[in-house]
Amino acid sequence: MHRSEITVDLGALRRNVRTLVRVLEGAELWAVVKADAYGHGAVDVAGAALGSGASALCVATVGEGLTLRREYAGVRILVMGPTTSSREIAQARDAELELAISDEEIPDGVRVHTKLDTGMGRYGTARLPELRENVVGLMTHLATADTDQEFAREQLRRFEAATAEHRHLTRHAANSAAALRIPESRYDAARCGVAIYGLSPFGEDPADDGLEPVLSWQTFLAQVKELQPGESTGYGRRFVAEEPTWIGIVPVGYADGFRRDMTGTEVRVGGELREVVGTVSMDSFAVRLDRELPVGTPVVLLGHGVLAESHARVADTINYELVCGVGSDPRRARRTVMDG
Ligand SMILES: *Cc1c(COP(=O)(O)O)cnc(C)c1O
Image (cartoon, rainbow, N blue to C red; front, side, top):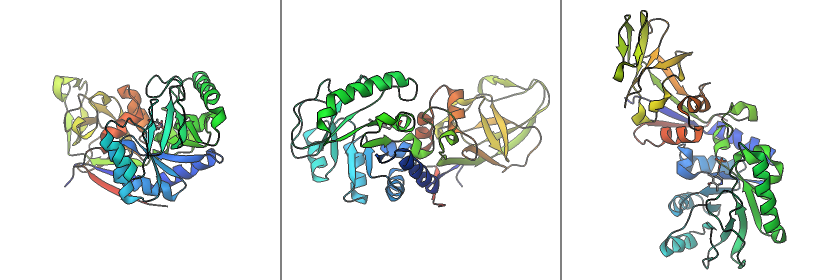
């Protein structure tokens, strides 16, 4: 039996995609499915996204693009990360992937999106190179769409100035945060990742933007015991009971993606929010209960009102990083459901 199970709700994903398509008011939605769809499973997510209004797929590597091409013939697939070898460029050409190119030298025979660095300070050229006929798109990436709209708008002004003469090419700049909050970022397409998974790019409640979490993660209480005053649970004795205290032991730990810095966050035990106490171990952690509960009581670590955004706040990270760590373990039981 598996110690925990994740569920990927493709019905929720489809609803998120449809919500974003509406928000974009005519700009295309391109589904970003890099990093195995942020841990959600790229092939299934890509199919559901394409079936509910997304018109292209974006990945980080040629390898990811090739995997998707085997499943989805004829769909636009953009590789956003750097292409390092001529072998990779040849593979991309043969599979009809499109490449984001961040320097002035543009490879032959493959469709290219020239990437401008307008302030991200990462990939991209400072100036537009001479555009050859295989350049089909112009793109940039925003550094602060979630935190500083003023700087994002400055980046968009630079992008507009550099690309205004090339309106016939597909221009795209927005990520999820920009798609939701900065209408002038939308151009011809928005590259949305986090929002299609029902996660808030702002670290807030995704419901505020009409989004539903796609990933949930369930386990159970493997042991229940009462600590007496002075007794502790876990490594380092970081939680010591001050009064008789029921605790439950959950058979999931940092090796499963439940991070060591999530002590203090809340999970749902038998329907009620309960605090994680003591040090998170490699494959277990403890929750404080208010009474004795049976072994086997269901525990929800994510989903059903337990937000990745809340865990991320406790762990001083972002929901993106959390879900990538949860979904990536192939040993975990995984269920994909479609409920609408
Ligand atoms: C990952 C990525 C995105 C998607 O960002 P979200 O915040 O997840 O929507 C868009 N564009 C580029 C270039 C990316 O690397």
